[in-house]
Image (cartoon, rainbow, N blue to C red; front, top):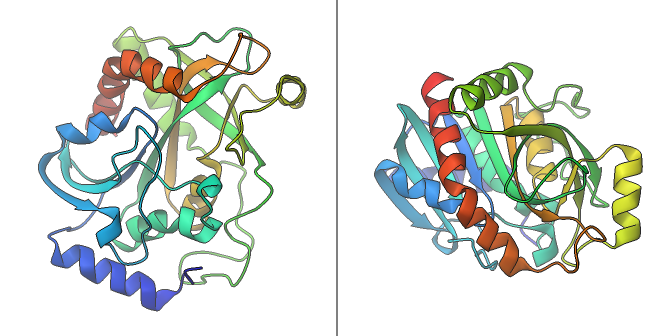
Length: 273
């Protein structure tokens, strides 16, 4: 287990600066099949996770496993091409460590994306959903343990975990680009097994619109660190019990189909934010 502390954070930041990483405006976390956006970053510096102090390697299909730094739509961005998941065996502090590093490099905002299963009966595979709120059903919290006082308080407020003004801006951009944008609550499960039909009925009962195995820990740490958050889910399939079967290949395939509108939406958002 990697212990996350100030010494490790300073070591990671120093290493990244030595690789040419400068000040950061926006952190980007690009989920399954959505990493292609990082290929459009100008003047890009690419650093494999396994070379970065405190970073494990990414093991999931559809995740390139590298940090990409450069300019996108006029903003300095540090993008994760693939993320770390709780189900890979990492503890929550390791899963969320890159968010700490983004903050330490000066980021003020985070765009977090994921592939998710649609629970809301009005959602279709291929939709994009702006996350309005989340439900943490992962069985843990990344802030358990000693508090990193230099980042935030022991008991951070999660009343507005997803920035309202950012969501308003995204909705306006989607309207201008004629991109259908759903809104809803994301519910995070630990994975790696997909949810059962009974669990999906439970999600709908308690107010969830989409389900996935990521995002929630990163957003908790982002809020603790004082970052403004925009969350976008790519609805890649209908959740368990709503279609015949679930598989990761379908997730990657559908994200490939919707990535053009996803990239257009995020790039225009960065330009106007």
